[in-house]
Image 1: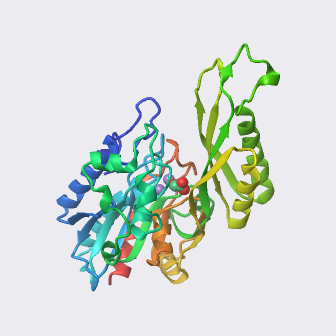
Image 2: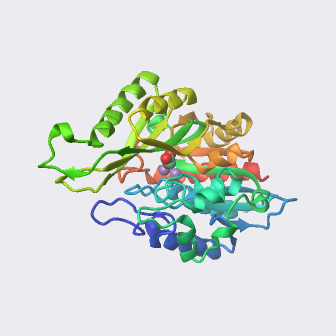
Length: 389
Ligand code: GLV
Ligand code: MN
Ligand code: MN
């Protein structure tokens, strides 16, 4: 399955993936998902927010199911595993349950959430946030991509009905438990020398858009004293972010910058930078953003996700079942996930991590060995079998 997905949205020059939500690549990935569901005789549903569900059995409010899955979109120039490994492993785990002749007592579903990375519209976990009501459609539908197209326009072009997005109690009621398998985005499992781990908590994290306004002018004829160059406060902010992060014990990243007009021979009129900040301590993250905000003309919070501590009982059950003789290690993570959004909405949720030898993620360097992926599938099948006994 991963080999079949490999060419979709792949940049031939870098080997990185470009799988923005609702792009041609994303639509092809959705087709792939539908094909895998059909091949297995699963009942395919797309909810009002664009999330895909492939059901083995028919879930209802009275008989909600156990769901596993992840996402198929990517960050710009991302790797092959962040997201797809969880979806592929979900289908493979269902196959394994069938091979084992397991008859689940409740429906089992494979989910693919829309726009987990927020690469196109800036807000991560868009599909699960809309589904749970953590994000209101009024705000989501007006978000724009780099071309200035709104989410509403983009969804409409993809044949969807944006006015129907929003909290979806009917779909939520079909999910009794959610388990997301994900490639590890660090080297915790390398250190532990284990192929599979379990998520303990997700750090609080957020994204802020900072506008630095100045005055565009000629790069040669404008005296230094007469300049109002927004690149300077932007640069000060970026350096200060690293210093403040070190002092406060958090992480801060400026990974996206837009300069207007963007000419080598013009002083910029506007620099827009996106700051991503995360850490175990939400107050420290907030303090960092407050400290840096002074340099900017305008600061807008694009998303904020409070800490998620996965429920202990379910987490420990997973660690026991997935770990074999010794419980699987429990690891915290600085990455956001749809499982965190569902957990915050009160749906019992948990995560399995698969070892990543490079520890690198959101980059083509992201990797998982085939044997570890297979161990992940077996662990996921064991967990599903245990949960739907
Ligand atoms: C998603 O992977 C995120 O943590 O930004
Ligand atoms: Mn990611
Ligand atoms: Mn992911």
